Length: 318
Image 1: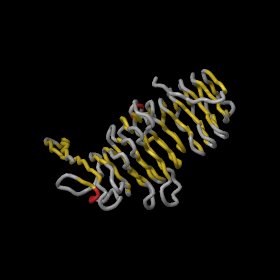
Image 2: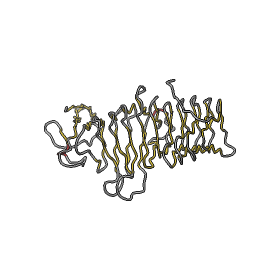
Image 3: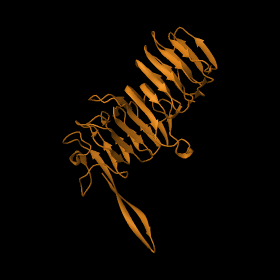
Image 4: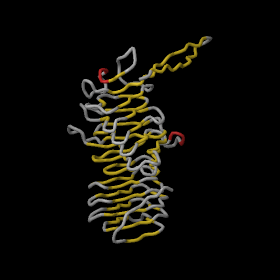
């Protein structure tokens, strides 16, 4: 537990006054309940008290018998979910949305086995860009949560964000309930463009709508009954786009370019690749017992297209 003092010069005519901003490292202990805003649930340095709620604060979440729930709108510099069974939940506790804003570059770390849960009405915005480090099986998961809220959870990407690191396998954004990945900035500002980059080994799976700019060097996988939707700004990358489950649909409503791997449908019956925008790639299309539905006059061009009796998509580091 550390306290850092950041000195900021405040300019007045003929006078410079130092203004101190206290940056505090907090560690969750969950001693009373699940409420993020209960200061007794946090260990903090003297003078003590408080909870992480400033863009200079760091929140560390180790394993605990009670995991934190963001029960109001919170801004914090860094969130590190360090316990291998730890969770942080943002969403349907009470009425209205619950927002967790993470402002530091490289401001999100999720350990193997840990989960950041975004429930309906929950919004997690990563505004600092950099790299979101999800180790091993660490993941961001969209879930329904409790109550009858209908608004899907959202992950908001503001600036360039890399989901990685490159050597990681099986790290993922998972939609067990419909969720949305969207942008928070004006895309005409190239330096702050809303861009999500999947490193090799990183995945987006399940019932997810991807609105943000995406470079897929990992895997985007429709593996749940329902739709994974590519929409909004164009998508690209050298990774895999897959449909691997009966009744799963990969809906393409925005152009996709550049994949050197495969469009793969590995379904026992009703898996569908629904193409409603141009798909132009030098990769390989493999159809294994499913449906490829191409709207007219959309262009669907692959370097090689084949229908095979069985197989799988193997992505290798480019």
